[in-house]
Length: 249
Image (cartoon, rainbow, N blue to C red; front, side, top):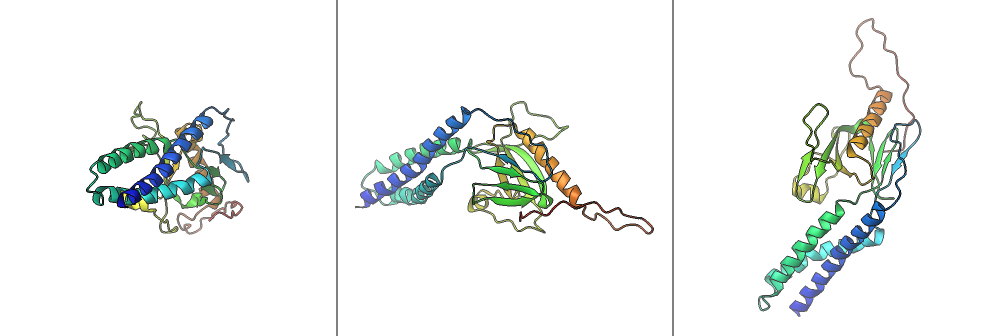
């Protein structure tokens, strides 16, 4: 009975994570073969720029959740609850290591829709988007993020690694103004300095997207005209027009 329960949880894990991996590979190949449209990233007044990326369907995300829930249960049962069947442990460990490696490799090319607006940006799937205002962003950094390691992208004027092709953009928020919730994965991995990551699966260079986002932010900050210091005696300060308010949080 314990062996049957172990095999049942192991099957849920294989179906959930393995099915997600196969779906991600199929979606990536279909996305790679599409005809890309020209994307203008320049800031536009009262307009939005929507960048689509390959993403998992809603049903596949649910199946993936079930698979990851079954993962620790299947591993614990295989290692500690089946001493009679010596073949269970090596088969389970090899299967999980191989499947996890394929999963994280396939998910590197998956992203979420990004919408740039004059007031901020939205990242995430529809109805699950996260809204960020430009005036709350304190840092935008490009980096190369792999399955098991990462490296920060060089800035202008620094030595450029010719082998480094950045694929993500990290952003940090002003925590004195915004409370940012950290996910469990961020806390366990120690990834708490930045508040979010934008995985570039939009079919354009990460450097180009990073510069465009910085330009959107610069214009938004200038439109807000924050008081950097008090005017000196006799100095006249010309107020700058403020941009129209946005429903972004």
